[in-house]
Length: 397
Ligand SMILES: *Cc1c(COP(=O)(O)O)cnc(C)c1O
Image 1 (cartoon, rainbow, N blue to C red):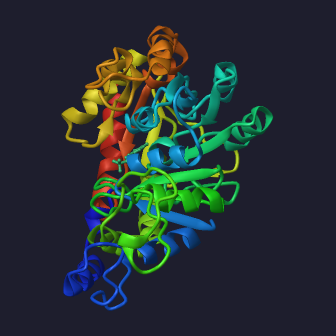
Image 2 (image 1 turned 135 degrees about the horizontal axis):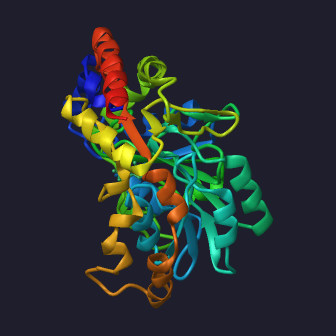
Image 3 (image 1 turned 135 degrees about the vertical axis):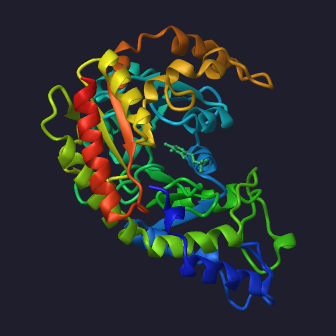
């Protein structure tokens, strides 16, 4: 997955173009910048590549999610449904706008279980936030139908699945808005950065203003611009965007390498007794950033995970015990360890998150092992890795 593995001349040249003018900010300084607008150019290219009308870059994937929620009008007391398996950014962004994260079970897709989503809807629910974890997607048709029926917004977190598709459409482009992360370990990186895509002019117009202190971006004098509503600073810098621009140009090459490496690993594991692969919803194509599989039991998964690390197979994760990606270790959320007082509406509902039964999620996550697919591996090394994984797993079970 990490795009930094293949940094090269393109990234260097793009960054140097920015350093050459010294204009590190994406707005203003028209006289100095020699017509170089890296953030703007990356936005246009991202929108085109993702077959959407609009793209707006922010400082991170977390801020892209926060901006998307704010621009959808989600705020104090509104409930947003999110999965038990994701990165902490999901609830951080929901809390950032004063809304309530409602944790909901995942299934064998490792993403939101549509039936559990349906059961979690209350009169306060405003949005569903599926997270396309580890390269594959939620059942978007089912979630869209639930949204339409209940008049809810759909916000796709595609931070780990850029380049994947669902029924021919790029992930992120299917909901009312979709978000990407370009942090250092994602498929393509800006160092730090994020992007929001949407086909809604309203959401886009709000997004560029909200993420720049409310600046309306009309005219050529920043100081004289109006501020139609309250904003914040979630801007990306030209330096980060310059790296991202080079990386986006290479996205399809990276995806092809990932698919090839994934295929080699997967066919080596095919047919191992008790091992099954993660379910990809009908019509979905992964971005192949991870190979996910289930063992027959939690005990077996733990044993296999330990055996893989013991023989030096790195970057295989057992998320069930992970501090950052699974609800079981989110004490700071569940026990409201906040530096400042959370809104009353949030505090009232947080109890449900800590008391609810997520044993359905546990059944899948306890058995899951998730192996990162790197793009920098040499051809020979991938084959050796695949064979070593197969023999190690077989010996462990
Ligand atoms: C990385 C990630 C984010 C947040 O992105 P940052 O750019 O690190 O803030 C959000 N959601 C998921 C699923 C991620 O993997």
